[in-house]
Length: 166
Image (tube, rainbow, N blue to C red):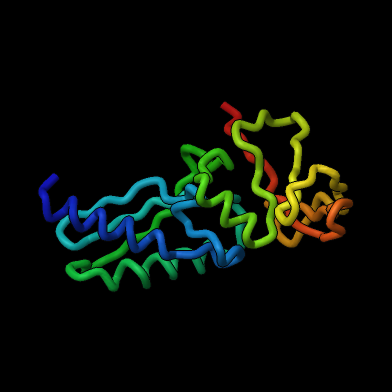
């Protein structure tokens, strides 16, 4: 890879770090682990993105935001965003920074290295207590549940763990 293409790829990655999840404005798509691959060739950028859920209603917004952000990079003439499903996105892809940003937004991050089918411990994002109850497994989106902290008395959401099945 030439030095200029490598430099442009680093610039594109930096720009992608500013593309926020439209449903969780405190976290970007890099920290959510959604960016699978970035290819840069002669002013053309191809971004492969792993959706957190295949039926996510925000995918068209994420695609638009990626294109708008990357098109502003000097020397970029074309941007293609492709949603890919292999490998599947899992919550283990969320970075440490992403987990902290979820807490700041009031969402308890999923546990790392969760084994599907096993219960998971959910900490209150406000006070850290595990003395919580699940009010509804179905939250405002398919990827979140609604809980209540019995320690600090705050309702909050928790991101459901999604592990690789194979």
